[in-house]
Length: 302
Image (cartoon, rainbow, N blue to C red; front, side, top):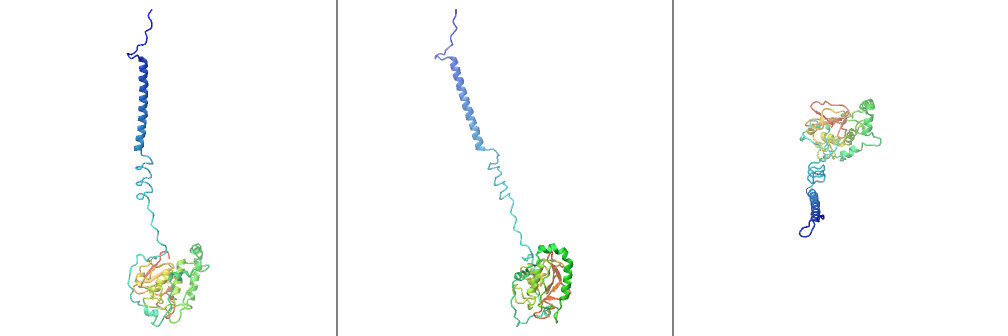
C-alpha cells in the first residue's frame, strides 16, 4: 500500500501553496495602492486645472471681461436730462448787435433828468402771479375744454375795457392788465413780468446789460417779460429775437422782431414801447399794429 504523497516543499521548506497565496495577497495590496494613488492624482489634477464652471476666472459669469456689471460691457448710465421749460440756456442763439430803433421817437425816450427805481428780477416778478386760488396747470388742462367759450367772451370784454390814454395807445388805469385766467401758468408769468415794468421809462439799450434796470428799450422789455415766464435766461437784442423759439405765430404769445425793433402779443394784447402815451405810460397798448417787415416767433406749444 502506497501512502498519499505529502505536499511538495521548496528547498527552503516553504509550501508552494503558501507562497502562491502570499504573492497573491501582495499583488492585491499593490493593486489597491495603485488605485488609491491613481484616484488621488486624478482628483488633484481636476482641482489644479479646473473645468469651465461658473466660478472659473476665465469663463465665469462674474468675469470682469464678460460680466453684466463690467465697466466695458455693461450698460452706461444715461446723461442727466436738461432742465425743462424754455430755451433757458439760450441754446443756438444767434448773436446780433443792437441797431438803432427806427421807432424810438414813438417810444417817448426818457430825458437824462428822469430817474426811475430799478426793477426786481424777472423770476421774482413772475412768481408774484401765483396767488391763492390761481389755477394750476393740471386744473387748467382739466377745465380747458369747458372754458373755451368763456375765455373768448372774457377776452372780448377785456378788449372793450382797454381804453387808450390820450396822446397814444397805452392802456389806462395803473398801466397793467389783469392776469388772464384759463391759460398756461407760463403765460400768466409773462404777463406778470410785463406788468412789472409796464410803466418804466424807455432808454435805448436799457435792460441789456442786466435784467435788473431802471429803464428798458423794446428788446429789453420783451426779454424781461419772457424771462419772467422762464422762456429766456439772458437779454436778447431785437435781431437775436428773430431766432427765438419757433417760426410763426403762437396760440398765446407771439414775438415780432426785426433788426431794429421788437414787440409781442400776449393773450391777444399788444406789448410794445412804440405808440405809448408818455414817458411813464404803459407798454400795454390798445390797438394792434401792422406786422409787415417783422418775423413772427412763438414758443412751441404756446
